Image (cartoon, rainbow, N blue to C red; front, side):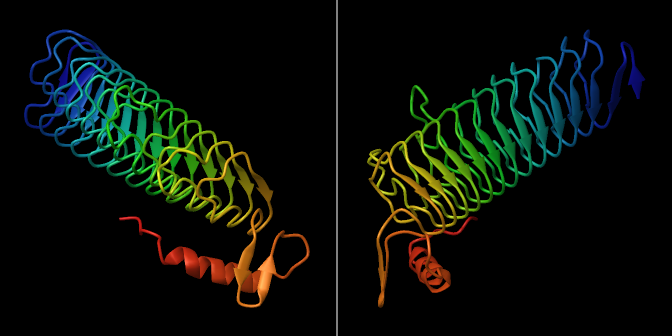
Length: 267
């Protein structure tokens, strides 16, 4: 059913309370149900933007941005994406349950199943990949500390709670980091165990290469470049102190086996 001011409503109680505003589209049962004066909103799916009273939000998927009231300029694509967002603005969530628990957070980008799922108020974070930044700001620390993290790859910065200004690129890079800050990991499982004890001592590390600094827990201000680089490994009859001239295939296999004993799987 088309109505005035470039507005379209289709579905049970879609845009039921609209009085003013312009350019709204509600497609699905209770889509944009509470919008009275808002403009330029698009809700597609049952309950999408059901409580919205603000402008310029886009929600596609059942219950996407369901509880949003005053947040603006949000984009949610996927079932329950940004479902608990209330006043947070400028967020982008693509994937089922992406930014699921976000309430007041701003300027986050989450792409992938459960990316940034537990983030409450942390802002300016980027998570690309299934489970990326899964536990970011999950403790609900007030004021929030988990800002400016970048995670690209499945399981990157998975356990990060209050760490900030970390950069992780590669599957499970900085996987165990909890509160440490300003670390850069490039490569699958680089800095995997960094800050796994949550003491926040392992800051300002740079690891480039698969498994680089993989067993570092509390060390800080280290730089390691190369596969399994940056530490001494004692495995059977092999001792490795650098990754410059040794065939690393058996070493990498052994390291992976050791890491697997403590690694949690992504839901």
